[in-house]
Image 1 (cartoon, rainbow, N blue to C red):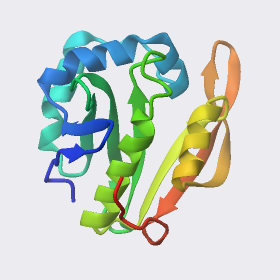
Image 2 (tube, rainbow, N blue to C red):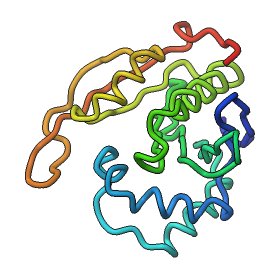
Image 3 (cartoon, rainbow, N blue to C red):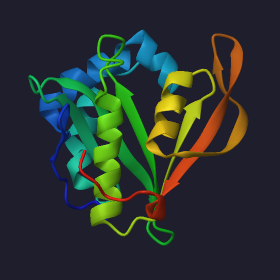
Length: 183
């Protein structure tokens, strides 16, 4: 379903298939303390493993990994991914991560999500896209709701971070709820 790796253009961002040219950006993202906290990533990433990971994303037709690049200077500001594809039930997961506080609040994430949903619901047979967001990440949950994701439930105590448990909120959006539109 994701054999084609498109480049998607918006006003604020361009989404490009990930590759080695973006590995330094991913490395920065994976080591940014605030991004690590918001995504619940734990463990120290290895640069060579990160390099191999980005080099291999184009080989997978069951996921779509895109670099989020600023339309202003084409600099890497994050990544957005459709993964966990269930081709029988026409559903997948969405995850997004931005480089950190210096790129937060500029609309990059919102536009990237809209572009990916336009692609998912406009050019593939996908019916459902879901995501998880940690309960303490209120900014992201607000953005997802504003875009059209609906809160479906809570998985309790899914993340142990700094000695404290946090819930994960499950959200989704369905194709009938997403009319393809100009961004």
